[in-house]
Image (tube, rainbow, N blue to C red; front, side, top):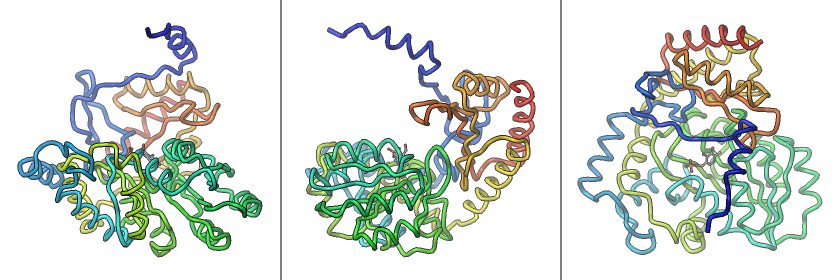
Length: 388
Ligand SMILES: Cc1ncc(COP(=O)(O)O)c(C=O)c1O
């Protein structure tokens, strides 16, 4: 029998920590329809505006006609179809790695690679603000975990010095931090990984498609070669506007994953249409740099506009712009006020962010117009007066 869980829910409600879903009745463009109203969307990961792009939709529809609606088996049984193979080849080519493997989601990719490679004789050094899927990958691997202060390579250095007697050592970091929009200090992490003969893994879910001259992500942003990073992880469901989780790197790493990752083996492979739309997205991103240039123009306009208004946007360097409010209640009140004024900008509270750092996590899209941005900044100026 289910125990009485209402007290727990009540406690969440009383502390403004209760979460629920909102039904979206349209595609995720810069305008979305909720409750029979059109709102300007400022909190989607559809950074390049590709999630409703005709080319991606066309590729998905064609794949459905040819391969049906589901993979209906694990990749190792009969779920690995031509669209999976094509996507893996395209992703490896895009990231300039030897090979790539597709998981159904980024979350399962993080769990899969960490559990395949690490066990109780190993140690992981994980940035304090890494994504929850990395934290869960650390836990599930059963390796010892050392958390280093956010982006603090001196702190990491001191931890590495005291951890020589392990079978394997892994440094893991988000490339672009998902709630703060700052970029990991990759060149320094590469040096430390080399000095201490440590594996380096980068979760670039929010960097892929956005950073670097060709959109390859954080390593390209810093002018590093792809093999400076041992394990590239990314997601198809952010800037790519599609689906899936990917681990890319050396072919032997990919072989090990196919043999050892429970979250690859004991789950149904990604649907073929999702593979096809993701491949189409990689192609589009590679051949249309103007989309990324629009995004960067919008990022700079919004960040500068918010800073001029006096909002605390932390150390953002990217399309993820946290408007840090602090208090949970005030964050929700501002988010509600924006909603009333036609802007959808979700409030993020602990445990997703540290206590006292509740925020509006604004994400910029390449397809936001000048008018959208002006309306946002004007509305933020008005809302600021109401709440100070
Ligand atoms: C940094 C980071 N890693 C991994 C994931 C998980 O990716 P996915 O949404 O494809 O499961 C996310 C997104 O939620 C993320 O922000």
